[in-house]
Length: 327
Image 1: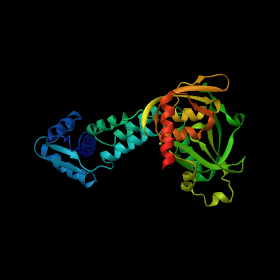
Image 2: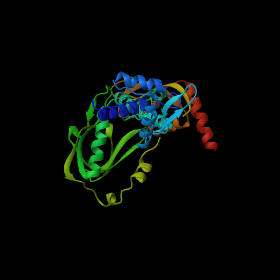
Image 3: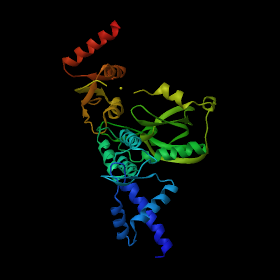
Image 4: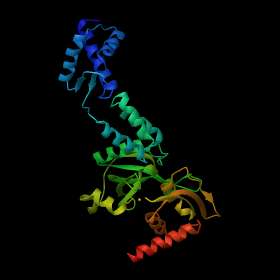
């Protein structure tokens, strides 16, 4: 290896070591840097490390040195600070449209943006809460396709499905493909992604859950729409159509008409057990957060969903209702 190539490799090794191992709490002693270079067959002296670090500073890396114990070299300011990475990790973990497998993969990539020591703090963030995640692995790639279609002004086609009591996919329109001109994506309603677009068959703006789409294809058809699409305001549309809700946890048993399968799977996750009760109803027992908002959500579903739980629930509901009326 020539002296010039040797120097390039030396700087790359030092840079990688600083980024992956050096932070303010874990500075790297000069001795360890020399040992790492020696393992790569690159001889170096202590005083040469200082000049190498100066070169790395000139390239934009915030190399810092601390005297004393523990003393050594580390990277100060990074592209992403640790609190920022924690926020991103929590956002990935809480997104229901990203599967558990894809969440783990993305979090590993985020961990690579900081030192090994700080990455351990990100790993602890992963288990803050056991959130319901989608089982549809294709959502991640569907979102990318939809962004491509929106940017290119192209229509998309897809099949759209619901779940039945057996958690099987049941395609709407007998499996016929929807043709939709996409105008925007909304991330809302408990962290699901929705496509807002002009439905070619119905001739109006509609929204569709991205995780309920199958066989999504970007076509060569130009985007269509009427006058309502010309000045389409995605924020305004989202405020009109989507909303979100806390209190104490309790075990709740619900008796529902079959048309509420999707609602219950959305609210409580795919793992919930749906027990058929005759031909047109099913029951489920869930751990729910009982609050005025919960009862409001339940009341909003109408008579198709009944709370079959004990007297405490009914009494609590009556008390909350009386309090609300007094206000």
